[in-house]
Amino acid sequence: MIQKLQSNAITLLKKLIRIPSFSEEESGTSQLIKEFLESNHVDLEVSDYNVYAKNKYFDKAKPTILLNSHHDTVKPNKGYTRDPYNAEIIDGKLFGLGSNDAGGCLVSLIATFIYFYDKPDLNYNLVLLASAEEENSGDKGIRSVIPLLPKIEFAIIGEPTQMHLAIAEKGLLVLDCYAHGQPGHAAHGLGDNAIYKAMEAIQWMSSYKFEKKSEVLGEVRMTVTQVDAGSQHNVIPAVCHFVVDIRVTDAYTNQEVLDIVKKHVEVEVKPRSLKLNSSSIPKNHDIVQSGIGLGRETYGSPTLSDQSNLSCPSLKLGPGDSHRSHMADEYIYVSEIEEGIELYIEILEKIL
Image (cartoon, rainbow, N blue to C red; front, side):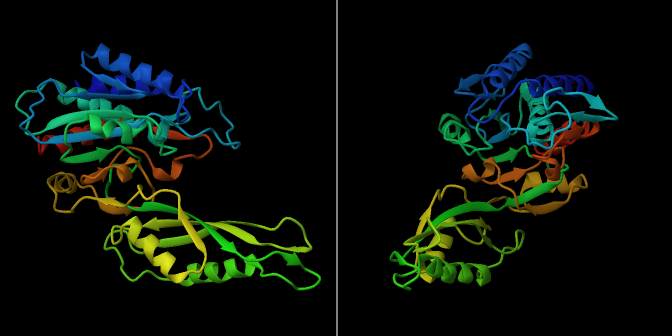
């Protein structure tokens, strides 16, 4: 049965790659996933472009595990030398946009869900969610579906980790900062230069070290990534806008980091969102110990995923390599998908 699941998963991924599915434009892949699950006799629900299903013998009295990955992609970058939608296999590599991030994970989780779908007397319920709008953290992605699902005990988020166990993930806090001054003529040295005020705040941000350090994720990383000010060479600017990218660990909430920044700088600070918090799962959790027992390593992930939208413990785990995500001529090894399905099943069997 597992060999058939592996073969069908690879065929499904090739079909998914051939359908453009940028964030907010996932109708084609949503329909394909729906048809694939229905062909495997799975009862399902659809919300916008999200497809979700519960195992056949779902029992409200049992805790529920969420199996989630996304079917949207970023747009192909200009470095592509291959057709990003061709989905060809060469030397064991399946090329195509979204093959690694996160198509391989998605089809592997779908295969795993089908494997357990009609098994009675499981210790946990299983819910599969193929979500939309992950790449743009959109409002019609996983956040819109969570209220429709039963209470989740913990989640496995399918992202490329080489099937190692990402037991923590950094959150994201993006700040729009505005330094305010007074305009004046540069020749007369009049006015109050907003750029200089911004420089003071930027200098603090470049050198500040957050006091608490995460055991798994290390330090909070704060980086100024954009600066914009001035309209012409002879006018002292009244406003300087700059953007700060902060990768938050599980040692702080996003609100706590925001409060610290506001306390130390004399500029206007506006967060774009406080929702993308860090996420984690205890190392002694049964699902983590199951993976460790199969020789998988634990680590902290610096990249953001749909974990940030969950309030339950969550584990990031999937075939593929995060370094290939969003790269030109993206690919995943066929063997990685085959191994991913086997390992997902083995890890879950130990607790189911």
